[in-house]
Image (tube, rainbow, N blue to C red; front, side, top):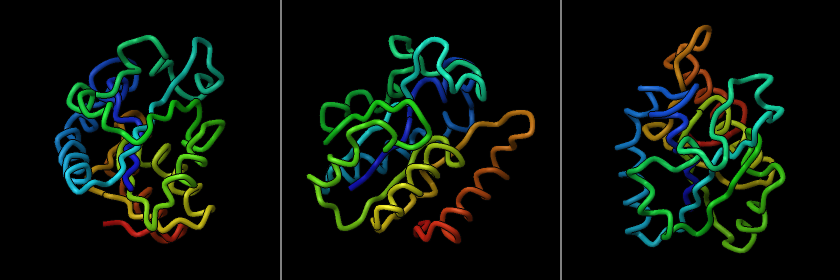
Length: 175
């Protein structure tokens, strides 16, 4: 099974957290998704899904507000959304927090969960942590992971730190 975390316009082309680094990762994510779907692998898309004045905006600027173009999956993936095993709208870093993802995974019963998407150090990391805490074998597709660049948040440094933490501390395999 594959989880694609927050591959949305709000992290690529529109809004306060739009990032050319994340935009550049779209073709790699698209290839991973297409290969998995062609193999018959269930794919789950998560979407960062905030409301006006969301509590998360105390930490980060407003982004991915439901009903805006930022909330949409990136254009390249939108056509694949109907093929998804599930689309999980999430309000916090982990795709498990106050969502139905736990039940979706129990129903699908995967032997191994692959994950890619945005942002490696936030939503990918916290979702991976919660997968590992539920004893799933996890493979993080590094080529399909990226994070934004900003003051005090160098995307290359932060991305590498997150992948190392995911592997060394959380025990997921980074491929």
